[in-house]
Length: 429
Image (cartoon, rainbow, N blue to C red; front, side, top):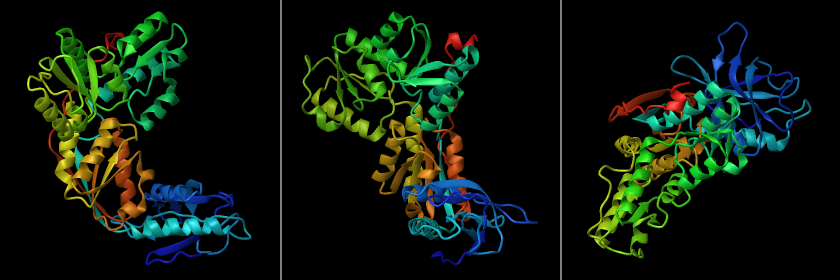
């Protein structure tokens, strides 16, 4: 087998192995008369294999000293020295007794080599605040309480928050996520997501006789109220945001005849309004602070009488997470942002780090980390978008610890104490 490294290599048998087309990835190595050896980097190896087209099988593994023998395949594991004892990378290349398929051997060897090249001590600079904000916590709690109070199914229009792990967990409890209300049976309970909906959606729900629980973040509700107020006083309302985002669609629906969308400063030049003296602006709550300021400056230069909200529309949590990442980005060799691909505030964090000149990647969880990113990266900046569960950050740190000793230094710029009350219909239950 083509695995050679300074680390020790263990061969192991596993009855009923994964078969000729799969590779066993050990979460834990078991040896007779000795404590189990954890393999926290197993998730990284599994990800490397998936990206090479080989399905990984995660399991515990009994190890012995009989290289080359297997009841149903051969397993190889690299064991690295750790701060508190040995730590296993946990890889197996498994096939039939008469030989492992060459493509599986190649993929396994390549995956192991990538992970071994990333092995070594590193520092994690942990940005704070990070992960869930008050609006996200409130929205998730609403769905959980409605499920407890009324039982499944509970329908949710769109993703309650933009995170695949949150959505999957609620689906397992009985939540049914739909794109539009025509998928919801008449009279059923439906929860509106944290991103908000337009008045037209509320009207459709009323026509269908749906029992609506509104989980819109109160900070998004504030923007909706401003849109109505600015339009009512006769202004053209310029909404700064990303076309197609659910929050933007909901805000545009509040005063569609009076509201126009701009996505960047370049679009301001071509903007035509009915009365240049009566222009107001609003923003999506999850934008990059510095880029939004550029758009507002361009609007003010074009329309000197421009008016805006009394307080910033970009929410406190988005701003805090961006400032916290700015405090560590330039010191980092690599920045990892935990969040799903459709999370606007998470994507803005990646862009912010890259503008600081640091390599940065958005990951849904630790399995998305590519070992090649880590090679030579001895200081890793780590944060999470406002819709990403905190446990995913802990899992990333644990996985990095499987590659060598990790020193975690948290940089907290502020402490968030915001809490939003639940809707009365849920709180009473």
